[in-house]
Length: 135
Image 1 (cartoon, rainbow, N blue to C red):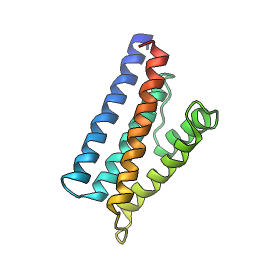
Image 2: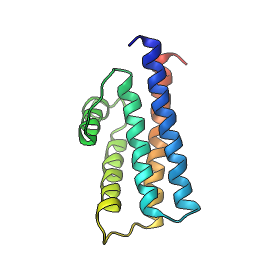
Image 3: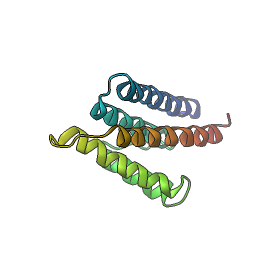
């Protein structure tokens, strides 16, 4: 891919992350559907991470590999703050509990934290991408 296509793809993934975050917020505030909101918040995080990886034409089939790569090459090297790595792990845990544990009942507060993490990461990723592509 040429640079313009790579940059467009990264921006597309970032936009997708923002759209999914909007859905998470709607699920939380309007529908009070905390499990779905947690799922969408996690996917907003996932798409934001994939936006970063798009800049280096890196992708993986498994979520755990995407997150592990991001943690190794972007969090541990402090391109992104270490605290965001911990928050991403927490969001992944809450999403898995929300999606797969029939006895888990997410709270509004815990769900809001996941949405806050997604929002924080999207802001960081947007800044990172804009610096990389010169916007």
